[in-house]
Amino acid sequence: MAKESFARRFMRATGRLRVVFGPAHSSSLDHEMTEANRILLRQRQAETLQWETKHRADGSSYVVPKNPGDKSLR
Image (cartoon, rainbow, N blue to C red; front, side, top):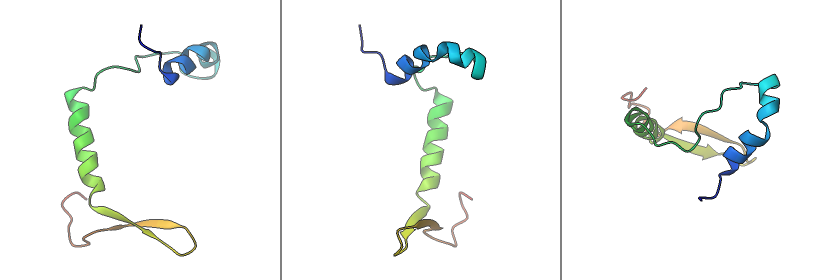
């Protein structure tokens, strides 16, 4: 038998609490990715390529477009 994932163990352990405090529905956590989700994932990954993270001297960071003139994904 394969080792049970942490997420599945957590969901099983907190099942009774979720009935009262949260959604009681429990779906499979280790299912295969659908083709629609794969397409959406590729699209989101392409969108992240248009941004770059800049870091300030105080340690904070912010995101700016790599090419401000490119509006293809916005």
